[in-house]
Length: 502
Image (tube, rainbow, N blue to C red; front, side):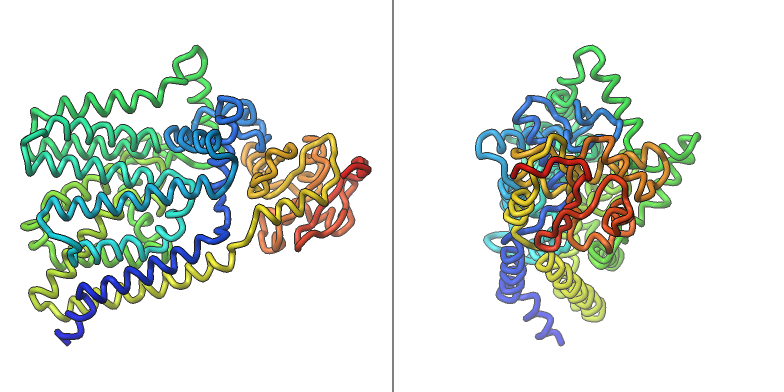
């Protein structure tokens, strides 16, 4: 058994496993489907590039977002707008930005292990890289235009600089400035990124590096202050707060549900486990993490105390300061969790704790099985969406009003005609605090001047959205009827729409 475990956790086998995971990931990139947030953030970047302000012109729900949006993830959208301006409008340009940041993270991971005097391609580096890479969350978000990977990389960079300063006093003020800038940039990428500044501050206090604290805080503050530049003009900050307070989704977590601050804090703490066991994408990995910490706690505290402290701070601070308990935010400190798992597993092997090691390896095996299932789901969803959208657009007559379509239709048709997305109905329902009947939804479309509606492929499986269009599909609506079908997508036409031009 010892020989088998040593072989599985040997450098050659770890390289093979990492290579297989990388190959599966690479294969999944071809015609990768547009995740809903690729569309949401992509549109914001598009309008910032074209009009100089952030807005979502495709969402008309009485929220004012079609005129200007103040609540957005600044750094992520700024970079996206630069990409659109420099390279053009493409789903894959935006996705590739996230991918490049993700790949850069592995260089930082290499620097972390080199900092701790692990030479070359060490087993700890390989196992950690595999645990990060062979994770369903990372397969999805590693090629999605969302800020989590950017926040993760910036946060890990800040931690790396803190560790360098702790271990080596030479040049530490430059390191602290870099750590503060990285933490500030993490906040610019997502407000939840403030946890890296708070964790860094407490970390410096714990290790009594008091003289570095002012440099860290000043560099963080200067960088983070760019978040508020556009809020300085009169009235903008009030609009920002109004949009935050009237956001249709819950972005306040449990803080908005309790009158007592103490009750709110306790409620968040008691619900934190949901983040770690939200779905099978994170449950096995989280279970492996907690198992590793419990089994190897003495070893971890003795040999890896700094990362245990820093990770614990991030977990606590994300709960207390974060906007929501959602699994995707685990990505922020997923590298730290992977490092802890890796050093724990290799210590089990070294100290011949074979029973606990076998259980840990079973969890890793389950993780691989789950990853394979999610990879298969990604492959099933992948398609040449821009070509499909082009075909649909060519079959819709030119009208005076916008086309209502799935959000993915903005790639690349946002430049060809005005588009409203299903969010115009979804968020209108949220504002009205009730579900619209099919007749009401179609009447709302007519009020918005929608000439044509693209009914998404397989939308009949969506019990929330399909009823909006069902009366027209069945021929029972006064405003809309079926025009034609293109590649499984239904096109509905307003009954008085002009069909003469193509």
